[in-house]
Length: 263
Image (cartoon, rainbow, N blue to C red; front, side):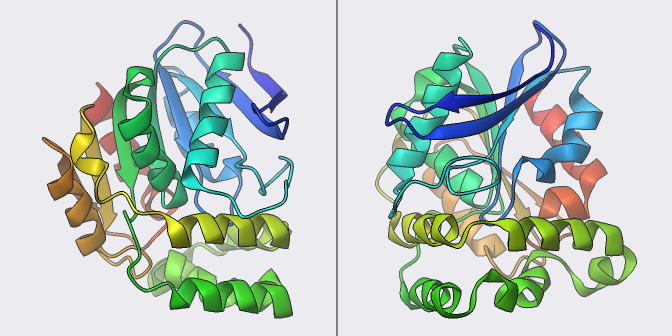
């Protein structure tokens, strides 16, 4: 099967932008993005791992080239989108690597579709937010002022000051992705993040799980990752010297961590 760029319909009809790269017949590794990004955030990992894995990337609904159905969305809805993609591609089982919101969708999959998961990587993520106020405030800001009003503040959460200074091209690419996100899609996904709660379901996750944290991550601090590790039986934890978007700030270390865990 050659590399593929295609639109796949979810079970509710929403069209999702999907990109498949890498070695035909290899184990499948599926990447899932953070809030306010698109599948290009995994370019470095895809280039590094394409000779080892069959790599599936996609734009979450409300993001990138995918449709923007009316919100709010839920983690279940976003998890069902993943299953629709796998069914359309006739893929039985995947290794999953999701960062931030992608890690939240991964927690849903681990508890609700374990038969489709070989190994689970939950990166720079949380399992629930006791205080909903920051999310409601963010939704209000986007509605009133748009995403451009938040872009600089967002970069300071996503990356350390040193990385922002030394990697202007990477920062420019991430800013472009963020501002290009459709406000309605961003808001609907914020509602899914605000309302998720995996505290009861995470102890039921039975697939091998690795939690990645960024030692300098202010968005999903190491303690949030540690709570996930403790909840999921047998889960491992790795800390990288990065802020929130660890796969871009530490691409080599991140890629090596994936390879070591999946094998």
